[in-house]
Length: 325
Image (tube, rainbow, N blue to C red):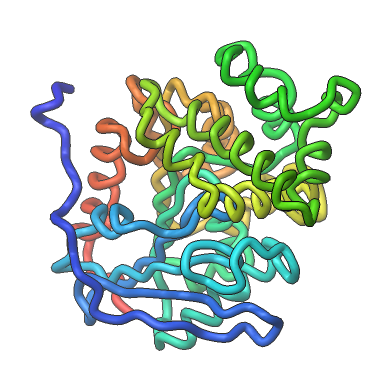
């Protein structure tokens, strides 16, 4: 497929609603809406965990058809308090999504998530399948121990040795046998000189490896301390706790609960953050899902081939007929 044939993002859209809601356990969460107020609802499930939403995420859905809802998860984006890991687990976030759905008067919605957003979307859909009209998932991340080992211990380091060396440099050699644990110790250290240094190194490692072609602007944005601390601390908190799942591979074990939910899985062939094997494994657990492997892309949702497939998927669900709530 030539670049001329590829679908692109919809024009930027202004919000028609935004606000905050209290969780009752110390968090105040930000949400926003754009598109068609009476349209088919879709929840944008951002990555990280700890990444927060950004304006580009509003542009993958036809604004004439979709009511696009965005939520900054606990501790990140505009939600408060920032960078906190207290009362912050996968199951808190699943309940937050339900709380927002009820708050907005939505009966059912599409879930649109990438990377950690795919993890959380699966966790929500397996818990509340009756609330999900469809799934559009990108850069599948199942949060298995083998996936964490690949990216934070031994695997991706062979592809990005210079970036890995910088990531490793923050940790004394005696602690490098457990990089996630060593980083968690520093990211939760009360001394800003310790946790900011660790946060920047953790975030830059991920920012460097996200796309097939490295994006220096993205790497610089990931190094911004205001972004890096929430991103790194929350992400590491989830990973050191294995996603708060009862068993390794829980999302695959519970995938039978997704039967009947239409799904499109999109994955870059050269995704080194969450290798394409993850999508392959999920497809086997969800036989009815459509798997689209993008031949010239990595992990980032902003790569042209990934954009094309995401927009194509949302258009497919737009055109299949009403799934309104």
